[in-house]
Image 1 (cartoon, rainbow, N blue to C red):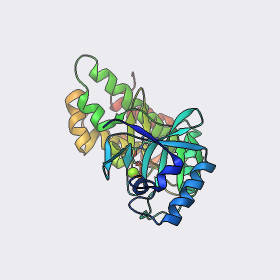
Image 2: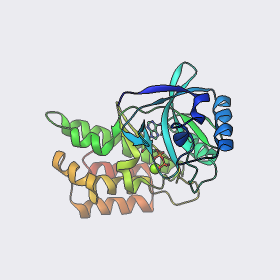
Image 3: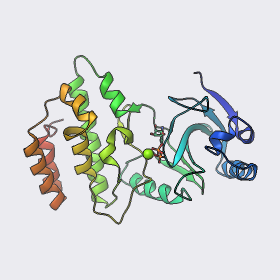
Image 4: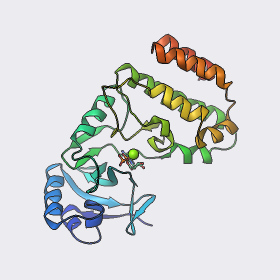
Length: 255
Ligand SMILES: Nc1ncnc2c1ncn2[C@@H]1O[C@H](COP(=O)(O)OP(=O)(O)O)[C@@H](O)[C@H]1O
Ligand SMILES: [Mg+2]
């Protein structure tokens, strides 16, 4: 489906109202949201992308939000819209955690946020699982190693600032790969938990998941026992030295 733009003021009308207030909202709530968008500097929304909601294409949907492309000033931005039926009652907390990730250059850059929206950098690319499935030919192993190394470095940087993403065991849903990989969706992140970014991401990529089965076909995966040993050591003491050892065991040290 081709993409098309709709000015913010028209979003109160059907069928777009079902996106602005997904799955459905009162007229009062919709009007409030339009004002909120205008305050955020959003001029229009561009409907397009791989997920179809009520016949309208969007960038994606989760349990907390619906994400669409939008026009912000002269540029594009991704707009995460809080679902009416979401268990979270505001988006500011997620934006705050994403901003903290941004301090170590992880995650889409936060541009602005409000009660019901996060305006952030639009990450062009595909979910890591689709990206890996399409990898073929010469250089695939090298490319994959480079992407995985970058993801794990980002995870290490998050561990280092005590920000736990919380959902990296499901990494296939939380990394978009374009020119480089980007970890998305900090809605379950926390500063008050033991961090397990490196360990969860490594397990998800190399040990038990649909993703690891595809990865296995492209790069040689080390012995599981050895991987787990190095991860245990890192879990106990999240030092650069122990992280470097994990990378070495994974064959990612010279990437
Ligand atoms: N910054 C972004 N750029 C492009 N697409 C995005 C961006 N953020 C999220 N998406 C897409 O929207 C989907 C839902 O966003 P997500 O943050 O995971 O929502 P939820 O918190 O509801 O799970 C993602 O899986 C992804 O496909
Ligand atoms: Mg999600």
